[in-house]
Image (cartoon, one colour):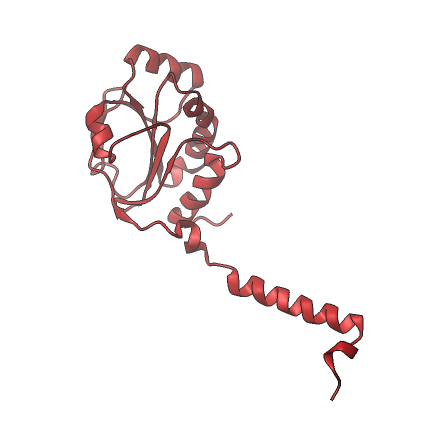
Length: 182
């Protein structure tokens, strides 16, 4: 029986390649892992009137994937998310996604100006302290909450990280919930 130390370099390379591929196969998670470590819970109960006068609530949006995004006109990180949110709404809006922007503790005139200036393509509603309570108590913004078709909160994020843009982070999760392959 040959000793391992006497194996030629090519054999060692083959052994390491097989081990490496085995590790990748074992640690590769299925697509459902996009929510790993985040337990689905009942989504928030809310009812708001959008700037164009429509009532929307957790009940009226049931059956859709909903991304609630809490922001303010004075919040720079909130504004940095707008291009990604616009893109997500354009890409998946007709496939079952509704983004709802909630302008938190802001002035309606400033919010309307921001919506027009940034050309936000999703419903925007004013949100006061009661909405902050419905969302579990807001400490900082932006806050995004992804809700599935059954009204369950599937993921939440606080703050803005330019390395983890909403279109990548939420896009992957939205595609999973809408069963879209890309």
